[in-house]
Structures are given as structure tokens and as C-alpha cells.
Image: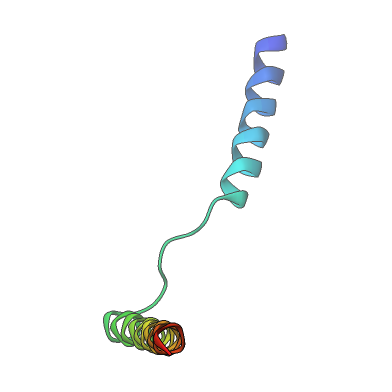
Length: 63
């Protein structure tokens, strides 16, 4: 009857692996769009800061 025992062990292993996996997105459409826009705004700010830093270093090098 080892087959039944092995089946149970495989089920337990699969359940444990399933718990470790990331679940679906639980946000609604508007919440998801808002969070996406917030993340995009943060990235735009980072890009602007990097460009400003680069421009400042370029101006220093010219002097």
C-alpha cells in the first residue's frame, strides 16, 4: 500500500510548494492603475535627478 502513502506525501509536497508561490493580483482595476502611475512618477523623478546630476558633472568638467 505504499502507493497510497506516496500519493499523500506528493500532495503534501505540492501544497507546501503552492503556499510559497506568489498569489494573483488582488487590486481592482483602478487601484492597480493608480499604483502603476505612482510607480511611474517615482521613476520619472529618479530619472530627472540622475540627468541633473549628470549635467552638473558635465558642467564641472568643462570648467
